[in-house]
Image 1 (tube, helix red, strand yellow):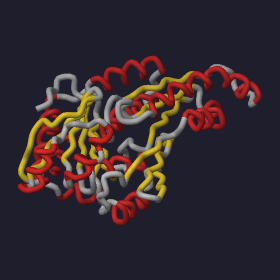
Image 2 (cartoon, one colour):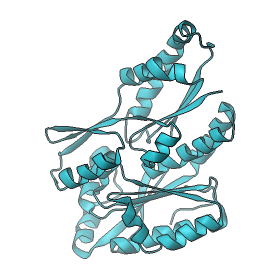
Image 3 (spheres, rainbow, N blue to C red):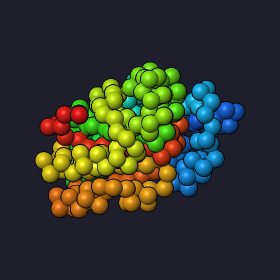
Image 4 (cartoon, rainbow, N blue to C red):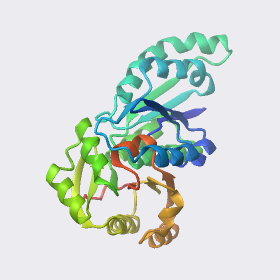
Length: 314
């Protein structure tokens, strides 16, 4: 059986990983002032975007537009219902974007129209799809996608993969350390994120106090505060080291950075995390943070996610 994966471009996985495993990307369009920019997870475009756009700090400067119901329907009917027999569509949390709802609406039309298309192409008629909200953001969306890729390569069936993904989604934890608090306070708060209060924003800006944000099952909260960005990142890497040593629910840790990914290697605690992951058969996937993420959390932010049913945020 041919099983495919579709994600939106907020999913923080390396472009070469997505291309290697045939993961299809639904772009998200960003409005920056009067300029429209498409987030397609192209590394060079992303770095140019950071350099050109992210110094603008008007509260209403950025807005995002994910694929519409009609665009998702056309993507499936024009291509995916012929290329695959079953497709998993894994989206960013439905509390931050309408793309999950759009995909669910589109799926109803897709499942009523695909038979004639496959029959005309001489393909056996049976086709299935599952639309899942990852209930998470950025690297938290990436963890179940990386696991879906692994399970497909191992020959898993759609029912086996689907059950596994639902378990992982409930136990995926995402952490983020911002370098610039403005974007989270002004932009993310417009989408209902209250994880950073006005007093925390003001104090943090004066004293270089960085919040450590945690997203789990659609909810984002501040779980700690540290002096300085690198101290916060080191704390995340150390947290991941302990989780790897205790045993993860999926053998992947996903990291994204709002800048050149090579800089992650020089951050404190990263070398120890790499060594621990190698010793325990865990892959580390490092990617540029998506444009969609960066307009909300700011340039220079770092996000890290893993799946662990034994983990408790602190």
